[in-house]
Length: 163
Image (cartoon, rainbow, N blue to C red; front, side):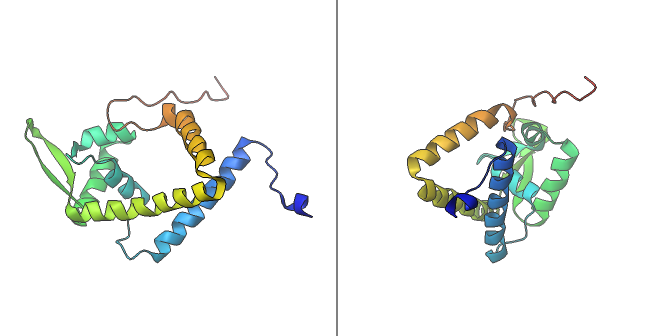
């Protein structure tokens, strides 16, 4: 009977999909319990991407491989929520620097904490050594496609069937 209940992985895409379902369910459970402000994923990613010293919105757009317009809209939303401020760039008066506020730091920490807790649970489930290897392999395989915070070009698009 136990063999019937063992997961059957047809290929890596199945395993990734099942893992993503678990990740989303566990993360959503935390969000449902959270008393913090309602933050969309894109807003949370911007809060997380912002270094302590702040960054130009154009650098955030390049680092996240999204449009300047989309970053501008998300930054404006975050500013209206009191989570970031924009200030003139001391190095270039024409540019603006985006910085997290203290409230933004608290929200970002609140968004990061449940992810850290999930990883701790998973490490306990499979063992810390195996989890460390999993993370190292995951990071290595994803690195060419991970958005750099600054200066990295996006990877080439995969070929289309017509190529």
